[in-house]
Length: 451
Image 1 (cartoon, rainbow, N blue to C red):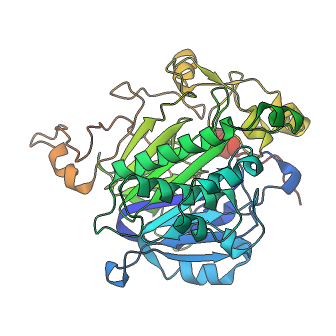
Image 2 (cartoon, helix red, strand yellow):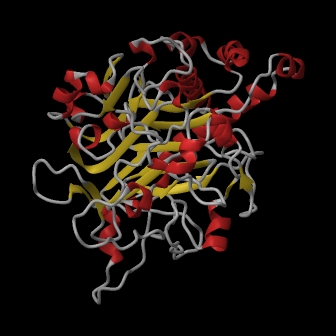
C-alpha cells in the first residue's frame, strides 16, 4: 500500500517543507511508514515516488509531474527540485506495489489536461474486473492508460465518467470544473467499481477465494478544487487511514534553519492552508483530524467539507461497529482505536500479523466519544460546536466577516455550501519540547527498532 500527501494553500510553499523536512515527511514515510503493520516488506514504500504541482498559469493549466522508480530517500534530484520549487497545490506519493510492475508509467500521480489523480489502496477482485472495466471506457480513455496499475485504470474510469456527465476532461476550464462536479464524478466512479466487483460470479468467488473489498483512498484535483476519499466497499471494515489539517501557517517551532519540528498554526478561524495525508506529517495531535471511514472530503478555496458516501455500505447508526482486521491484513491500520485501547509496543512485539487480525473490533468515532470521552487518537474529546462532527476551514475571503467590531465571531458565508468552524484545534501546550509519539499517535509507534 502507498502513502500520499495533498497541499492546498492560498500562498506558495516550498516543496521541501512538505516532502523533505517535517518530522514524518512523505520522504520519511518512504522508509519509515508507521501506519503499516505488514512487516513482510518492512515499513518501506520503495517502489518509486511522484510529485505533482501547479505552476504559474502563464505556463499553462497542466500540472508539472516528476516521477522516478528510485526510492524517494535515495533520489538526489528530488532533494534538488523540492528545495527550489514552490506551488499552491501539491500532490506527493510514495509507492508500494500491489498491481503493476516497477516502472515510471506506474508511478503516481497520473494526469490528463489540468486534472491530477493518485490512489492509496486497491480494487477488489482486480483480475476479474479489469477486462469489464476497460469495456466501459470510450476508446480515448482506454488508450490513455499507459501502465498496468488498477489506480490508473480507475483514473481512466473517472475521466470517462466526467465525460458522460457532459464535461470534457481535456477542456481545462479557467476556474476548474468545480467541487460539485468533481465530487459527483468520484462518487459515481466508486459506484461503478462496486458494480463491477458485485457482478463477479459467485462460483468464481468461492472457487478462487476472491476478495471483492476495495480500498479506495482517492485524491483528484483540477488545479482549483480537490477531492479526497477514505473508502472501503464493506459495511463491516475500516478503511485505510486518512487525516487532514488546516490553519493559517505551516511553520517550524523556532527560527533555527535546522529546526524540523513543523506545526500548523491557527491564528484565527480562517485557513490559508489545508493538508491531507495518509499519515500525519507531525506528531502534534491537535493539528490533525481523522477523516471518517467512507467519507469524501472536498477542498475549495481552503474550505474543507466532509460528507458521508451514501451507498449500501453506509450505516446511519452512530454505534455501528467496523473491524480493522482487513486493513491490517493489507499492511495498514485504520485511524480508529479498539475498545481496549491502542496497541502498545509490548503487545505489538508479542503478536504476529495473524494475532493482529484477531484484535478487538474497532468502534465508530461517534460511539467512542460518547462512551469513553476520547477522540480517535486517545485524547480527551472536545465536542464540535455544531454537534455534527464535520469540520470546515474558511478562506481568507470569508475571514473578514468572522469578526465583528466587538471581537465576537460573526456569521460565515460560503460560496458552495454552509459549513461552520466546528473543530477548533485543542489548545497547544507551552514549550518547544517535542511530544512523545505514544502520547498523541499511539499507532505511529514503531513495532521494532532494528539496528
